[in-house]
Amino acid sequence: MEYRTAAIIGSQWGDEGKGKVIDYLASCADVVVRAQGGNNAGHTVVIGGKKYALHLIPSGALHPGAVNVIGNGVVVDPAGFFEEMETLESDGVDCSNLFVSDRAHLVFPWHRAIDELSEGRAGSGGIGTTRRGIGPCYTDKAARVGLRVCDMLDAAAFREKMSARLDAANEIIERIYGAEPLDKVSILDLYAGYAERMVPLIADTGAIVYDAVTAGKAVLFEGAQGTMLDLDLGTYPYVTSSHPGSGGFIIGAGIGPRMIGEIVGIVKAYTTRVGAGPMVTELTDATGDAIREAGHEYGTTTGRPRRCGWFDGVVVRYSARINGTTGLALMLLDVLSGFDELKLCRDYAHKGETLQGFPARLDVLGACTPLYDTLPGWKSDITRCRDFGALPEAARRYVEAVEEITGVPVKIVSVGPDREQTIIREEVF
Ligand code: IMP
Image 1: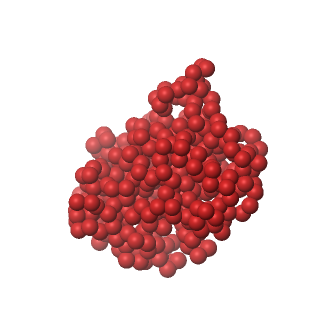
Image 2 (image 1 turned 60 degrees about the vertical axis):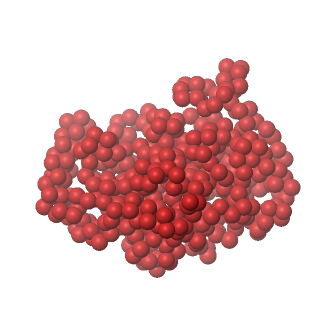
C-alpha cells in the first residue's frame, strides 16, 4: 500500500526553514508528528504577517483539524511545553488536538542546570548547546535512569522517582561542579502540578500514528534540528543528542521504516550553523555579515547570531544519501538577491586532493577547503514570484545548480517568510 506520509528533514545544521514547509504541507495533513529533540528546536512560522515561534509543539497546531503528536523520541520539558501552549492559546491557536507520548522522556531543572554547568566549565571548548538540558536528558535515557511521561500517571511514585533522581543530580551539581544544589520541595511540587496538566494529553502515540497511516490519512513527520547535528551521522561531537535524520523518525515515532513515503530535505540557499564545530563554507567577512543581516540569521531559541556561509553541496549530498531524500525544498532564495555573484561548494579539497564522501574526522573536516562553482547573481526582488518561470534567469540557474550538485530535485522554492511566498514545482503530498 502507498502511504500518504512525508518526513520533513533539516538537511544542514538546523534552522533551514522547516517550520514554513511543515506549515505549508500541514494544510493538507491529518496528523503532524514530532519524533526527536525537544525545545532546543525553534520553528518560526509566519501566517498573514504574524509570527509564531514553535519549539516543542508541532506546527500542525496552527491548522485547525490537524492532530498533533509529540512522539516517544522527543524529550519534553513541561515548563517550556506549557508556556508555549499558553502563548499560542493567547494568540488564538487551538492546542486541544495534541497528544504526548507516554514513552517520551521528561526534562527536569537538573538537566538544564547540568547542561549550563558543563558548557560553562568547557568555555570556548564547549559544544555551544542551547542549554535546554537536552543532552543530559538523553544521557539519562541511555543510562536507563530517566523519567518518562507515563511516570506522571502515578503521582506518588512520580514524586518518589523524582526525589531519587534529584538527589543523584544534586550530587553531581555539588561535588563535580561545586554549585548550589537544587531545591527539592519546590521542584517536586512544580512537577506534580505539571503532571496534573499533562495527564489528559498522555497517549500511546505510536498507535495513533500507525492507525492514521494505515487508514490512508496524510501524516507529516516534522523534523527538528538538522542532519549534520545527528548524534551518529553528524559532525560529532558538535551535534545534538538525538537523531534528526530520517532514521530518527522510525524509532522516535514508533513506526516501521516502510511507513515513510516522501523524504523532503529542507535546505537553505546558503549555509548556517549555530554553536561550535567545523563549517567548511563559513564566511567570516562582509559577505557573511550581509547574508546574516538579509536572512535575519539569529537563533529563534537562543537569539545567538548564526555563522553564515555559501551553499555547501557536499553537506547536502551527504544528507541526501543518509536520509534517502526524495526531494529538496530550497528556502530563503530571496536572501541571495542583490549579490553580484554567488558561490556553491561542489567538493572539498584536503591536502590537495578532492575528498570522496563526508569525513568522520573533525580534524580532516576542519582542514578542508571548499571547491566552488561561481554563478552570476540577480538584482531584482523575487519575493513576489509564484512560479518557477517568473524567477530571473540567474535564480533559475542557481536552483538548477543545487539540483545538479546534490543529485536531488528541488520540488519547492521559498522566496519569503509568508506561507504565500512559495513556488511549488512538484507536489510532495
Ligand atoms: P543541544 O541540542 O542544545 O544539546 O545543542 C547541541 C548542538 O545542536 C549545538 O550546536 C546547538 O546550537 C545545536 N542545535 C540544537 N538545536 C538546534 C536547532 O533547532 N537549530 C540549530 N541548531 C540547533
